[in-house]
Image 1 (cartoon, rainbow, N blue to C red):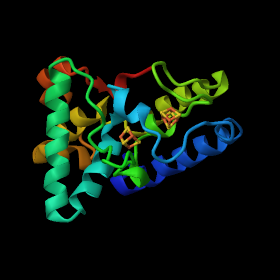
Image 2 (image 1 turned 180 degrees about the vertical axis):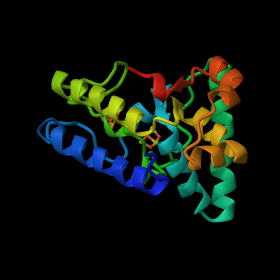
Image 3 (image 1 turned 90 degrees about the vertical axis):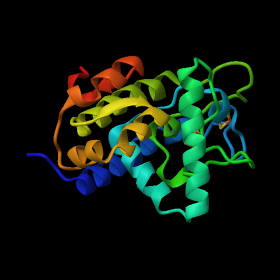
Amino acid sequence: MEISFEEKKEKLFEVYARFEQEITPYLQQAFCKAGCSFCCTFMGNIDIVTLEGLIITEHIEGLPEELQAAVKKKIGENKTLKENGQKPPCPFLQKNNTCQIYAVRPFSCRQLYSVRECSAGSPTTHRRAVESARSTIQEIQKLDDSGYSGHISYVIHLLKDLSFRKLYLSGGFAPEQIMKFGKTHGIIINRFVK
Ligand code: SF4
Ligand code: SF4
């Protein structure tokens, strides 16, 4: 039986909490701190699922109008830069190097930490934490099995289409609707992820 968006949302936050608990011993060794933002600036790809995209979209829609317009502009710019093969910073990274959507940030960001300061290289993590993140991603894709996975501004762009959003919210599944965009933007169909 298809569960509602609200139930999926609740389950998703349970999955986040369980993962955070699982990797607590590793996180205790992390260098990460507020204002450290190399990962948000140079990550390039920030993969999310539709469920996370909708939670972020709702969060944006709850912002004051002026702020909303500014965020939407940054998301659009991020999409264009990515389409042109560049690696733009995350559209939610604020001038003071903090995250504008911290409470609803996706799993891609939640799984990220490093025991050393990230500068030119990738984050240095523990193998067990990477394995746990991998299986958690599969669990999230399974939970969102009428949705898709892809870069943050691409998934948010899909959700701008109200007919797509309505179908998704009703639990409907019609991948042919996004076939063209999906192929050119590396969107993955969660239902077919093994
Ligand atoms: S992953 Fe790296 S750049 Fe990101 S907060 Fe941690 S140490 Fe800083
Ligand atoms: S959503 Fe927040 S934590 Fe994630 S990359 Fe963007 S600014 Fe960083």
